[in-house]
Amino acid sequence: MADLTGGKIVVQALEREGVEMVFAICGGHIASIYDALLDSDLQLVSTRHEQAAVFMAEASARLTRKPGVAVVTAGPGFTNALTAIANAKLAGIPLVVISGCVATDMVGRLDLQELDQLKVVEPLTKWARREEDTARIGETLHQAFHQARSGAPGPVYLEIPADVLGATVKDSAVALARPVALSRPAGDPDKVAEAVRLLAQAQRPVLIAGSGVWFAGRVDALQKFAEASGVPVFTSSLGKGCLSDDHALCFGPSLPLRPGAALSALTRADLVLLVGTRISLFLAYGRIFSPAAKLIAVNLDPGEISRNRPADVGIIGDAGRVLEQLAQAGREFISPERFSAWREDLTKADAMGKKAFRSQAESTAVPIHPARLAHEIDQFLGPEDILALDGGDAQIWMGMVRRFNAPGHTLESGLFGCLGVGLPYAVAAKLTFPNKRVMATVGDGSLGFNLMELQTAISLKLPIVVVVFNDQAWGMVMHSQTLRYGKERCIGVDLGDVPYHKICETLGGYGEEVHEPQEIRPALMRAFAAEKPAVINVYIDREVISPGSMALAAIGRKTDISALSKLVGGGSQ
Image (cartoon, rainbow, N blue to C red; front, side, top):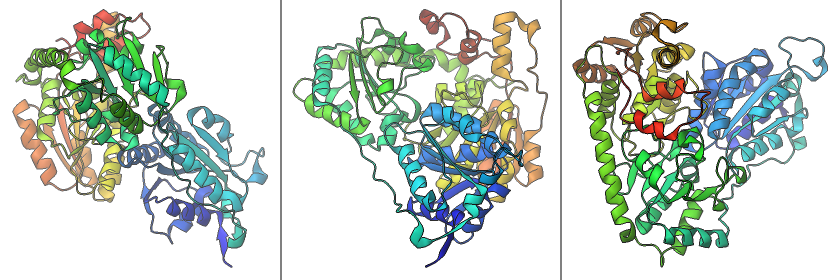
């Protein structure tokens, strides 16, 4: 019989769960875990900030559909991780965060880095637990993984006191521990039949596919249902790319601000089928839909079925299985030909919306129009390249032009609107898929949050390319202040001219600055050819206002859905 430390039990449990990478920063309270990692095949990815470590774990989960793992030390290590945990909570990303904490006999003694961590983190997680029995660590950790990925996925938290991690037990005393199988529930057949009846009566239906489709691992089920029914498809969150934007039935992201058919479709649809997505800000809290439109909601989380707007039919179940059920039940009642006129109408609206935006996307102006930079990047990237989006306006402009032709290839923070994700996401993406090209597009403001993860990428020899949308300001906030109070009332928004490309060069990477639109593509080619971490610092026109800035200026005001039409086509000069 062997003696096992608590740290060794943690690592063994991670190995049984099939974990390959652990993102972390060392610390005294988790020393036992680090010691055990030396004797394992797990890859330890050491970052420069705990926030970045959790962002990387989150990106790993988004890409692989398996819970990502981050390990943080007590006190400030724990609090540094909170923003990233909250980001995963709002996005519904399966994540396991393991934290050290003060020894059990030191609680209340004002020990180093003491904090009642469990109370702090519980509102930000799907499940949170403190384990004080070394023999039960493995059992509890497997339960954490099960909680993270079962039902509607989300982040979970397990804290283990330093003395519990450092203690030893006989392997025979360790509680029975093994991974728990994941089940994928089907929908209630009566609810499915009711949904099919509504679909059979509709004239202008739309389907919005979200992250639930991606995490179900059933991209094929979405395509089969769309082709069998002829219902036009829009996508959101990690659902983007689950049906390629190039597919005749897919009209791209459902964001109403994006040039295309989304605004026309969502305001005119007489039936909306939500599959694995939620009604949130990005759908104007449901007010974008006609009051007369019927709503069918498919979700693993019962609490999301009627959020913001009551569903006429709510189906609790796995997105992939329910799509199969709908296709099977509707085969005699729904045919693609029935909605052909509706699809032709949306095709025309899509072309008109994109035509109106073309002048900005093809602008030859200097300073560079941000839409031109986004367009050049999108044209440069292939469907198998991975893109991480970060920033305020920078993310808005990329979201308006990005073509989603492969699932799981675009990473963005989501509803939490979290800045600083770009570099960590890109690092995790390159570690996860070393043979794919990886790019991050970031605002100059957001780059500052986790700038030193450039050194992480350089130390790991990861040839990622970072493109900076540099307007020398907190651009989205600056523009929203201008719209609300006037240009002379802007405050706290200027960042100055920071040579981000030279910072990368100093750390050992490749750097280049760009001032004219025709220089963008050659610079991107040189950056990838450098085969080392690279920063392309692109100076853009800070006077261009994005639709996102207009929306931010409206925070705290009553939502006017009719005003959305004024934002489509992208901003003003």
